[in-house]
Length: 200
Image 1 (cartoon, rainbow, N blue to C red):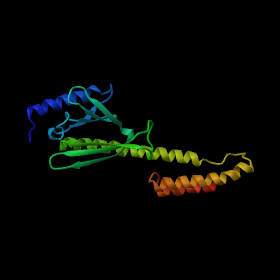
Image 2 (spheres, helix red, strand yellow):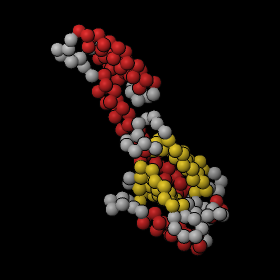
Image 3 (cartoon, rainbow, N blue to C red):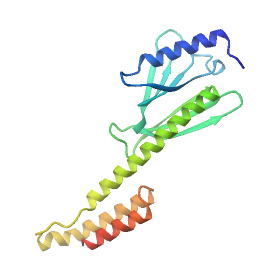
């Protein structure tokens, strides 16, 4: 079904707002706009997926707009629901300021009444970035665990070596926690466990 001309003008205005907040090296890869029937008390929400982040532009009735953005490294998960007259997109994002770990506080963003094909294009991009950054976080957490597991220092006195027995137990607990969280595989866990035990 074709949208009326007023819808097209609204779409162009929303797209201009999205383009106006892009950084120098940023590229808009896909975008979606809320259907008019879902925006009776406000102008329609426009969403964009760029090379570096997810953008949401909310325009009040009387000019201007508010911008919400989520860096891809902060994206925890994304969900798409496609209904009869529109689609909704739900993003869960970590709120940390650095490369977010697999745990920590999150925020949930929900955008309803999107055009189906546009929402699906956004979802595909969000999902691709989610999977890529999930693997990067897993690798980083694994490297941190390996660093904490470390080897025995040469020339250490017997007293620190005895204290290391308690450290080994803590490192084993950390490794088990990483396994249960899905951050490392069974074989990686077994390798870490063997290394920790051999250093006691």
